[in-house]
Length: 165
Image (tube, rainbow, N blue to C red; front, side):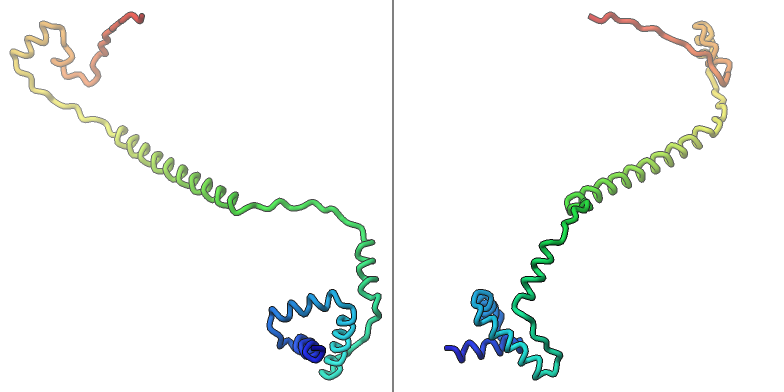
């Protein structure tokens, strides 16, 4: 059993162990102090074989680093607000609607300009031939506007009233 464990440690260092077995072995290494020491020795041997610089660290090295990290002050910096994907989508929809409104208003403005150009054209006076019998009838009823062919007829108003209940 011990030989099989040593072989797994060696395979782990060479990165040849399957991921599930590697995770299980790392979990055992974390809980067993003897296995941790053996793993460190295997690491030193592996580095020496590969001709890498290898330094043996004392057992309290990690504890000293953790203690120093815990003693560092904590800085509470303001957190930059993040925009959620939903907010981004809402901003995109709002921008699209704004663009559509601007586009529609520009089209409407263009159509209004076209209408103003059409309205600026002066109407040509029309010569109306009126039957003499009709002319007599119109003069008798004081409708001189139709008879005289004036361009600007007098405005006639009619007042209609009603009572609200």
